[in-house]
Length: 142
Figure: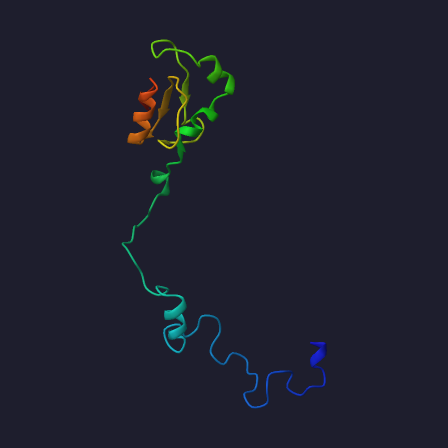
């Protein structure tokens, strides 16, 4: 630093001296001489928790979700308007959420008051109730 030129110890004091790494590098001493700091500011940093899962394949837990309030965004707006006043006995639109990359349908939000058939691998209980309430159906796919 330009400003420290000519000043003997460059702002690091004469008595203590500026030594390289007097307390160890990085996180050294977390369980020893820095224990108080780790316990105070980072509780739970050391140790393990839970069970081990050997060869965990994440594929079987892959379950992207979509809420009912976003279901109609998967098909064009014209489709919804064309079928707006159809009865459940007539031909109603089918929304396949698997094709859009979603596996599970959740029940958040409101559905427009028109019947619809929704195909998915999983449904929450609330989603099934809401779809049936507007005269629609939930179809489970493999």
